[in-house]
Image 1 (cartoon, one colour):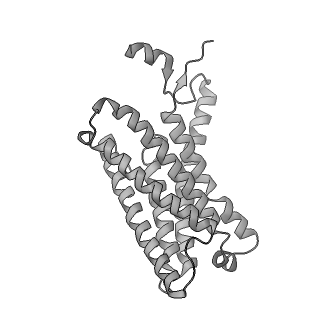
Image 2 (tube, one colour; image 1 turned 180 degrees about the vertical axis):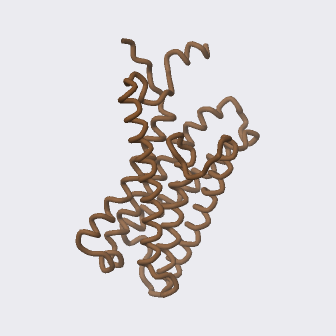
Image 3 (tube, rainbow, N blue to C red; image 1 turned 30 degrees about the vertical axis):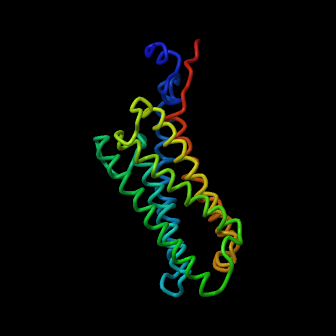
Length: 237
């Protein structure tokens, strides 16, 4: 039964069937895309941190914490498991998984701190909560992040499951939920650029560049997860 399923469904990358020249071009393009995702995530975090000027107000810590959590740690935590190039040179899968967990823990802690500063800032200024699309989508992103962490905990600790045989399917759910979290986070970051604070800080062509930059790592992460986990039926020639 298991052999029959393996013959019908394949989890191979999309480069199968390409010629040698096209194959190497495809590989280098994917590696360049991964490097661009690394640089974009780090660059967005640094620039947003500088623009927010941490310490000038309670709100100033919110962009810093959230960009660190989702633009940097979440991006690196996902790309860490990519075979196309990671800044972390771990040969063992176990080492990558441990670092992945560490980065995801940083996501939760930084997001919780950023949320606390935002709540405190709005309470001091007596402004309503969840009054914009950015805040609503951000709340959904935080809730989904917590659910994703719980799902990952079940994957890493099979003893928590009553049915260990369901762990492979849970891995698929974990990856799919991770993709949803990343897309929600990308949407939240892009909506933040429509806020009064960001539009007053960045204007003109630079604003449009910032608006499009989060799409670079999002496309790379989406391709990585779908290529690794979505089943692909073999094509008969």
